Image (cartoon, rainbow, N blue to C red; front, side, top):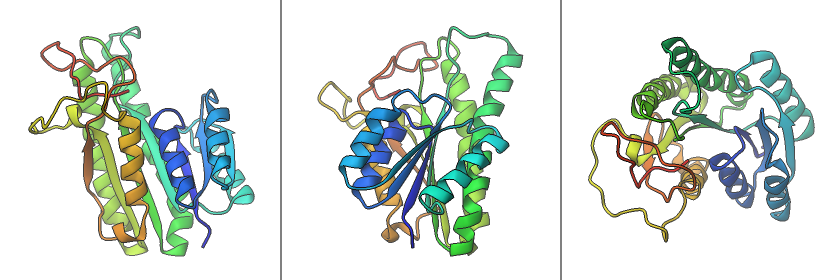
Length: 247
């Protein structure tokens, strides 16, 4: 069986997951609307001895993403693992109006739908596959916490539904999100200080485990990762910035 991992949204956490999966024996396809950073990630993947294919495509557009999947099938083989990164917030400099908020949430969740539909069809034929949906916290301004919860709730619901629908085909579906975005309060074990791993590294660890055969019984589950933020932090509902959030 070809071991091909598709990384939809290939920056930050996606890039870290790509390199980690390549070290585990997967050939990697990077798909993103913004090709910035493809070169460095592709170089690191190539250093592992695995193949890397980088494609520019709109992950929220069916035609564009399916075209990319066909190219991946021709160049590397059918995908066995899908890692989709979805920003949880709306950047502060964008429109604060409700119409924009709704449109942004719709696009985020449509990305999950388009990517999973295009990749799980070949997975189902082979009776094996892994879908890993990753929530990415971004700088979002005063309404950031609300926006993050809206997208995260959709991501969780979609992932759990996918897990039920695909279980009969040997495909698992799980999600990863920042600890600070967890819908239920969790005890803070320690502060993610400057010596802590970045959130992207934590995502890569989880993705490596979920892609393994030993994780075949884990589906419909979520993992919340506390990591050192590499980018401006997400604001919580009380207006304070949380030290556990990354990206």
